[in-house]
Length: 220
Image (cartoon, rainbow, N blue to C red):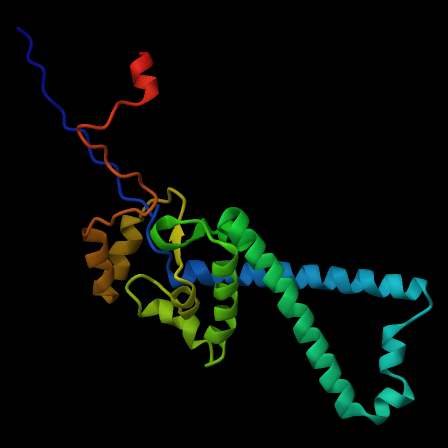
């Protein structure tokens, strides 16, 4: 007579999927987006200058003319307002477009992050606009609105609170027990987070008993 031993399946390790994104991940994604937007602005300015030179107009020669130098203060104000307005609108188009289209910018996609609305809803145009305006509000008091992620339990910044959005992980990255064990010695809050099993915002709701089976199972 053979005896079969029942082996309990080991529960899969928890992942970051659906958990609120931390400050470091969001910061790296933000820096990547800044580099992308800066590169795009440089390309557009270079292309615009080539087009103007084709029509025999050099903007740098105009700014360095005697009339412009005589009114140096007005010239500096004009340059500041022009560059700020141009950067503001280019960044606005970049962020709002990707938020609405994919829920993430290129920087957030690289870091495995996603921006969601209430209850995981997609980002609408007006919600994206409110979030982008909130970017600047968060930056005004020495970027305090961005650092608010460090003290908020749901990792919400000021622009998240203004727009009603959240930033979550959308990839299956695993926890590093060795790294978390070292960090828990310095930050007890991390140890409590690891021990407590989180609920993913991306996981589907469990089926009830009265819910019909999926078409694939009925075919089988």
